[in-house]
Length: 271
Image 1 (cartoon, helix red, strand yellow):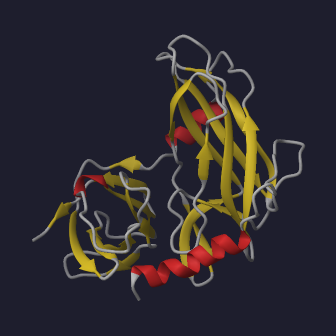
Image 2: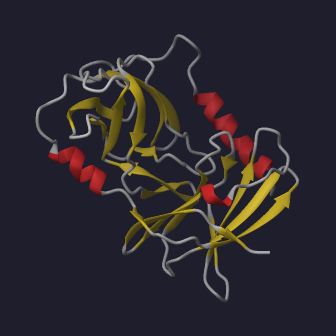
């Protein structure tokens, strides 16, 4: 099956469940929340020694519900964040805790159950001035079916001391492996097939992303055995629906293994 053929069902699922314009809910603790959420808020956080504001999106999910990691696989709804309502904000960096395996039909994908604390580093536009944070979040929430949710959240004033909850979530990011695994790139009718060597022999889940191309759809990774070690194989479809040039420096591989979660950036093409 080509990458485009895999993409169509995911797009249909997303569009069928997405509310029309004007039907989104503005949510915060105490307001009406999307199905599957018990609470949602931006934690106040604190200001670090570099003048950046540290905060986090905290989601409490209902029992049996899940939400998706940044790269949700073939049919998940990737979360989207809009910080335009913030004040004195130059940019943000999201610190994703290691994802958990979640069952979606016959497939295993990456996401979170129970509680998600997603740390955020907010860099001020004007150094020394406070950063006022407001975010609108579009996310997928799933139980037997997946539904879209919308959050409109504002953080209270920053605290004066580090928040242990946020610090713990930051420490749960995948461990960076300073290596460039080998990779094989093959052109297909509507994009590319990429196979990346796995630096760990035992892998529960793997994801491959293009860190510099958010416009490229990437399928869920299939882990395939080889004589010299397993590979994570994905198909990629760009906006033109044609093969494209791949920058191997921006291939990001994330692994969930029995020994923890790991991440590499960059791969070494063969041939």
